[in-house]
Amino acid sequence: MPPSNIAIIGGGLSGLSATFHLARRFPNSRITLLEKSNRLGGWVRSERVNVKDSQGKTANVLLEAGPRTLRPNGNSVLELINLLHLDSSLLLVPKSSPAAQNRFLHIENTKGLTAIPSSLPSLLSSSLAKVLLPAVLLEPFRKDVLMSANIGDASVDAFLSSRFGEDFATTFGSALVHGIYAADSRDLSVKAAFPSLWELAKLGNGSIISGAIRKTFSRKHTPSNVNLADYELGNLPNIMKGVSVYSFKDGMEALVRALEAELARKGNVHVLKGVAVDSIKEETEHTSFLLNTTSGTIPASHIVSSLPLSILDSILGRSSNTIPTAARSLPQTLVNPSSSVTVVNVVFPPSSQQIHPPGFGYLVPRSKSPSIDGNSDIEVDGYRLLGTVFDSCALEGQDEYPTGSASNGAKFTKLTMMLRAPYTSHHPLSTSSLLSLLNNHLSPDSPLPEPVLIRINNLVNCIPTPTVGHLERMQELRKSIGKGTWWNGRLELIGAGVGGVSVPDCIERGRTVGRAWL
Image 1 (tube, one colour):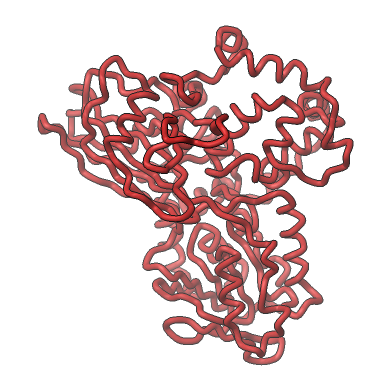
Image 2 (cartoon, rainbow, N blue to C red):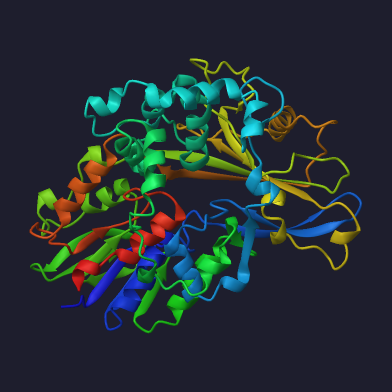
């Protein structure tokens, strides 16, 4: 029997996706989306601002405080783009572009950037060859410590160190984790964060490279586990051919706005912004709940939570004793830590000077020093720089200029710095210190010009860190609320803290929620 009333707690991408797909799946059910803030979209935030230089040149630039690009392999996102008719607003970055081909690292206490090799000739001439070549050539012959010990999971750092060596893990593994999770690769679960690497190692009897070779040769005979027929993709697969990454002309929030507008047209959907859930009580034994909120009570036969597990745990802890004690708390070992990130948008005035090399941007590996003493060039005012995106190169089409002005001279240069914020408190960030950091990293021919805009956004606990054993713990959690338990499948958990942290992961989990209710 279909659910009569569905309450979805949390209006980020996971909650929006769940609401959209549940409204399609259960057109006769009443669906209520509750979001405690006055806007939807969670950490997705796109903002247009007008900038002007000292010569009177102007532009309208787009700033992103959260995710900014997507890869074309996320079918759940492509399906939404098709269903919401957003294909005309796409901004595509082809694989042939400098943004797709050129990516860099900044190695601590060195001047300038180091290009990550993208071909054999560039590898042989790269200063990174002394790390990369031995790591790759020796990997198939290394003794498999982790797999032979039958370890069920490992940190990304331990996994890569065991296969490619410590230098590789520190230089490349930590930088990759910084760019995606803003976390320490020594804490992150490789099975949860990079499951394909774990599977390749299993396929290759411990060797990632051997596994990749075997997979390549067996691909012709192995059917894909992704059935494109399950997704309503329209012409998007053809549009995405040859695309490295993509976004939207008005930024990632275009997806949020389109979802919100579509939900407003659904007669069975009610979106409540500025409404927080305080507690839950069972109204009638095993048939319905009442959600106590800041604006009254909301009935629900089924509940979907996209909240961080720590917040959901607090709500359950305050819930009525009509819910058994065992069902009113989550084991604390299930709650992952989270990273806080400070995003700094910087816009430089038009200039004949090249601000940065053509490319997508650069990442900063973990410090090899046991501690930072304040003299490192990857730290500023207690914040650790994780990486910088060259937005003007990657997503130039998002910025707007007065008619004819953009073709008559240099354009504004936009980039975004990501820093790991202190866990205890946020200290003021000195703009002069930030510029000093950029000057050292970008190593321009002359000092960088004074920016026309610096925008700082502190995103507190924005990215969950799935620690070692995460997948097994989440499986245990789902069993504890599934069929045969007190919740009996009436509560479903989605969101970055439960599944993957990427935009496609969040949307996919929202897409599949509630299928067991049919």
